Image (cartoon, rainbow, N blue to C red):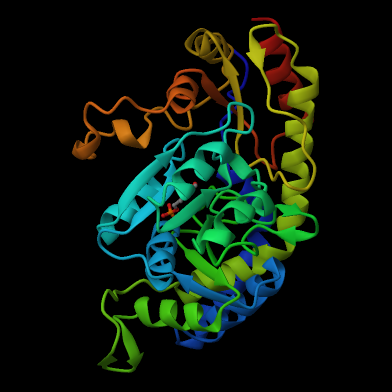
Length: 366
Ligand SMILES: *Cc1c(COP(=O)(O)O)cnc(C)c1O
C-alpha cells in the first residue's frame, strides 16, 4: 500500500520551523510576561508593515477579528451585511454574534468569489449596510471592482483574509483595500500559530483604537469600560512570538503553494475535472479546489490510492441547521452547485514533488 498523502501535514511544518519557534517560546517563557506585551506589539508592527497597512491589532482568533472589526466599523444589531455563503460559516458566526443580518450574495463559478453583478444589485437596492469580502482559498478578489460598487454608496467593506495572508494585486497586499480586514492564525492557515490567533488590520487609527478597546472588556484604560460590546479577545505573547518568527518565511511558503497549484492546473487533464485558473501573486493557494460532476466518485478513487481529500465547504451557510430564519429559502444557484461539485486536493508547502506527481497521475487515471 502506498504511503498516505494527507490533505495537510503540520508535523512536517513543525520540523521545518522548530529552531526559530523554540527560541521564541523560550524567550517568552523566561520573560515572565504572557499577555499583551512586547512580542504582541512587535508582531503587530511587523504584520502591519508586511500588509502595508498602518495598524494591526492582535485578537484571539479569526472569527473574533471579523466580529470586532465589523463592530468597530459600526455594524450593530439589525445591520444588514452582504457576504458569501460558501466560505465555511465563519463570517455568519460573527454576524450572529453581532445580531446582524446576513444578506447572502452568490459567487462566481470560476473564481468562487463574491459575484460582483449580484453585489451591485443588493448595494443599489439599498438593502445592505456593509460588505464582507472573503478572499476564499487564497485568491484575492478584484478589490478595485468591489470598491467601485461600494464607495459611491458609502458602504464600508471588510476583507476576510483568513485564507489569503500575503496575496498581492497591483503591488498591494490582501487586507490593504477595505476599511478594515481580519486574519486568522489557526495552525493550518498560510501563517499559523501553535494554537488560536487572529488580527485586525486597518488604515484608520480610530478603527484600530476601537478594536483595542473591544478586545479587552471595552476598556479605554485599565478598569474603565467605556465601549459596549467588549470582551476578552487577546493574542497571547507566546503565539505572537511564534508568528513573528514565522513571518519571514511566509512569502517562500506561498510561492511553494502556488507552484504546486500551478502544476495541478496545468498537468491535470481529465475531461471530467475542472481546475482553477493559473494565477500569479494574487493567489496564495491556501486550498486547491477543483470541481467535477462526479466529485464523490473522484474522491473515492483517490481515497483508494491513499490520497486524502476534503470538501471546503459542504453546506452553504443558509442551509446550516442553526440558521432557522433561512429554512425553506430557495438558495443561491452557483453556491448550491459548487457545494456538490467541489473537491480539495492536498496543497501545502512541505508536499514533495513526487507526491504532487502521484496526485496528478491518480486524478488523470480516474
Ligand atoms: C479560518 C477562517 C476563519 C476563522 O478563523 P478562526 O481563527 O478559526 O476563528 C474565518 N474566515 C475564513 C475564510 C477562514 O478560513
